[in-house]
Figure 1 (spheres, helix red, strand yellow):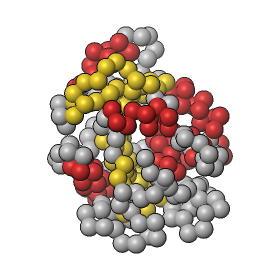
Figure 2 (tube, helix red, strand yellow):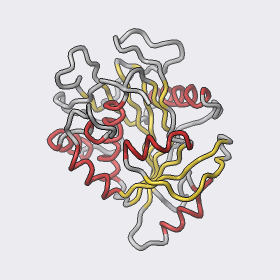
Figure 3 (cartoon, helix red, strand yellow):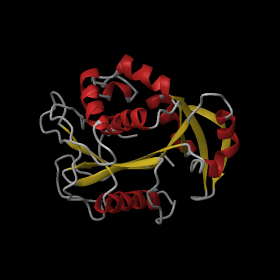
Figure 4 (cartoon, one colour):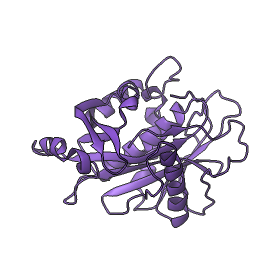
Length: 269
């Protein structure tokens, strides 16, 4: 479920606490510079978690965060053609992972709990569903700029690769307000029990066209006075450069421009 935001990475770039996922790979990735007007900020690197060291580090983080929530410690990132898993790292330390999956004949992982609700959306002509799952984030302070950078890279990738119209997530009820306020997701249906983690779950939905509108309206701001992720998203110029890089690769991580900004001025939730 999309509800893991944990404390762990030191603001001063100190060594990772015991158990924090780390990778050191020759894979090329999108590297995002420190923020505007934020001396001492740390850059973040976003990669497709396809190489084994990336996947191992992301799985380690995922299971450490999930086990702290009581969700078990045997989860694995999926691996098939309709999904893409990403990892986010600071100074080689993996601080986040998130998987985007497009609907296919095999269905979505959310069908395990919310098949009836998703089928109602599928019945609408021209609708193409996708989901965000396997989310874990481990950072101290206010993680909003880091989260926004990761979500925006995945949004650009998904727009190019899958052309989805409707985006779904599944969250623990205690995190519903966060996703309503920060990303404008809406609740769908009633609470159900997710059998894989034996915990209550709420299905949430957001039109992809609404994401585009919110990015166009708010992205590139400083976000300091906003209870929203969208002001922390890339500016139009920055997003164009990332999109161009994403369009030029197959299923490998990509090199991004040094001018991109991912502000690590963090606020927890």
